Length: 627
Image (cartoon, rainbow, N blue to C red; front, side, top):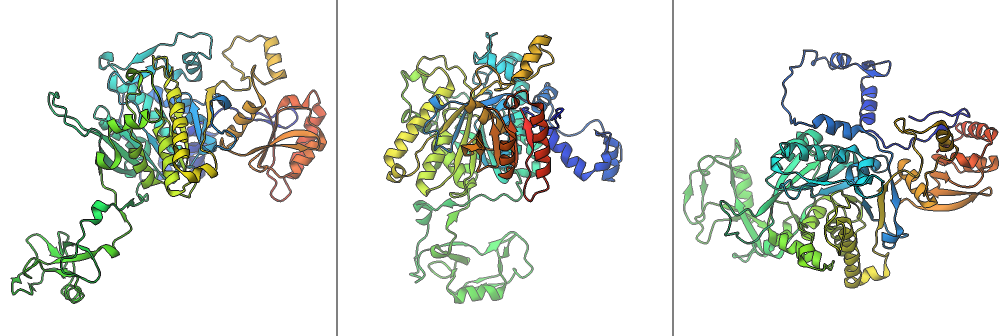
């Protein structure tokens, strides 16, 4: 909630957007009578729905597990963290449009809610598979930012221990579900209405993941469960079956309306077309005339050119076309009777007339999208490891993610691709590679926890992610001459940290003197101008790559975001002349640090009056905020 100051200026809310706020707003709009004194009355909701007035049973179908309530609380709990820019770990940060974020993805997803809500075209995640050894998470990680800061050494307590989710823990599946639920719920908010999410998973949790995604996305938005052939050899040491596949679950934000792009046609597919009758229209393939669907005009006899009479379609089927349409096709030489003219007829489909692409299938063979060994080869081509022991264990092949990108994104739509379990960074490389191939402008946001690797060459997984992106950028620019003269391939790095502003904590032991000094200067120790601007623009709803220009406004330095849609004054002494000049620029929002007013309460009052007066002007939606 934004509190009004004595001057009438509101204080800017530094907390992330809570998912429940959006839902409450929708309910208020649809069923205003369901709210009494701002509280939701469930009985009023039932009455408003009419057919739902009967008492619901206490037992209902759904997915439940120990800890689900705590996971829901973790989802709704806002964060006051921020994403701080890290230019030293970036590549071409001034021009880069791609983002790498180092931090706990739950906190990061909360921070992205305002700026990226409904903007992401495709999400791909490769979450921990919960094999008992692979699913590693920090103890008490659901405590939020404080726990994360201890885990990464940014806080004083330290000693945060990693735990394996062993099957003997008693909450083997529950822990995994509690980790996944809030992250998927927050990710759903970021998808566009035509967006889609792909999730790779194995047999350990695919059954639970399907139920969980049904709950988060809705079962009606399930699109497909694809099979990826991840291993191309037989494991003779297997005791039962040699498992060689993983699953790719696909859900749309609106699954009933979402349609995949067609895949490029391949030479192997086109080679299935031939021209045995020397048809001048060229190569063709044939398909059956009969189908199982009932057709009232599809039960007639057919006389073959070779003399055979076919009494009707094969048992249990119907001819697809009427008798008149059939003979019209025959006159156009579109019916194939076989070499002797007596076969069951088939319809000719010419290569020149088929659609430009291929409808995707749910089986993804390694020959088309790569396998696990190819994935390691992809990684080793970009990152140099000191020993084979320290190589990232479970990367995904670039070709696998390319397949998803081809199905879900447009080359020139500036589509945003999100991967919040970035791992080795294969998603970033896949985006760059496909952009280089089709001159696309897709962009990515990668999020990776700085999980310790236990090796000296790359201390954390996030370091491997950065190294891979650097290696991929070098290789792409060397291998694609068009990229050399174009915009540089690069990425901006951010890391999760405490807010640049001191946040009042009612549980902290701060005396009166400490409280006074806290509000006298709201910036935290170590805060930088660049960090302050990055935090404010994101929390004000602007993307991390929004253009930021320093402008002089009546002698006061301001940061102009997105061509003046947002104005930020973080330093210096504000003047009424500067306020009037900023209002005249007609921004959507003006953010001013409290310290820029000094002790001039009269200036605050005049600022408020100036902003309020401007609201009557066309297109002026400005409002002054204190931070």
